Length: 285
Ligand SMILES: C[S@@+](CC[C@H](N)C(=O)[O-])C[C@H]1O[C@@H](n2cnc3c(N)ncnc32)[C@H](O)[C@@H]1O
Image 1 (cartoon, rainbow, N blue to C red):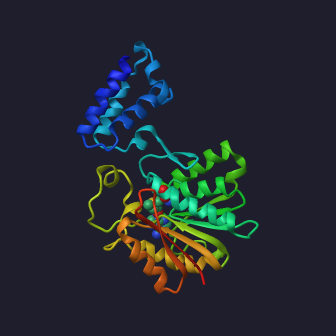
Image 2 (image 1 turned 45 degrees about the vertical axis):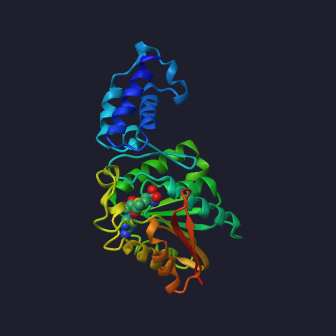
Image 3 (image 1 turned 120 degrees about the vertical axis):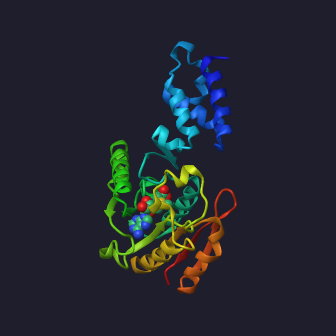
């Protein structure tokens, strides 16, 4: 055993005790990033190379600060995004809805489809679509000034790394209820992961204390922002255009009926990788 592997084992036990969901993983990710080695090479770090800041970062995770805030990085589909205080950490559930959007764009007979991402946060959905559906032009809307700054940073970083993708993401500061009026009736696909947690619901410390409130709470039934997304999508989409909206696992029926009652075509529930209801799609009549 090496010193670093011993320290990782101790750290994992401390994180488990603190209620962290994936303690071993998190200890290894912290160690790998700090020592600048892949996880598969942690055992090769010489004892003399052990960086004692490891324990500062483990203490932060023990206090339930999100792993992505400690490392500064969130992985989303094929992207490495910068995240930290003031922006929602993108989740794996959202990768599934983003995959639906990318597939739907590929199947559309439109040369340069126009996409709107309502509530873009870090820019995760918008940038993934720009990367994987390179013919699309993506308009990403965000109201929270801090989140908007993170999105701007990510758009600039991805643009630098892969200039052919990010010319196609335009960021718009403002409320998605009234945004993008110049595109009314011209958008091919609207996608949104809005705030949808009912007020008063209990959430993990990583969420309640670190994700911004504007990214989480959706009013008494959690549906306030979903209703606004439905109305905005009805305004933005051309006839036959598609919408996809993420929601909490227990909200599948409620979100389905928001679209069905408003006369949308073919509303459908979709599940995430854990088999839970996670997003609804529909077509504008
Ligand atoms: C759950 S987060 C999703 C962020 C990102 N799309 C993702 O999936 O990781 C919701 C985002 O919507 C933004 N938001 C909430 N209400 C909004 C509104 N009315 N107009 C614009 N943005 C809004 C929040 O600030 C937050 O960044």
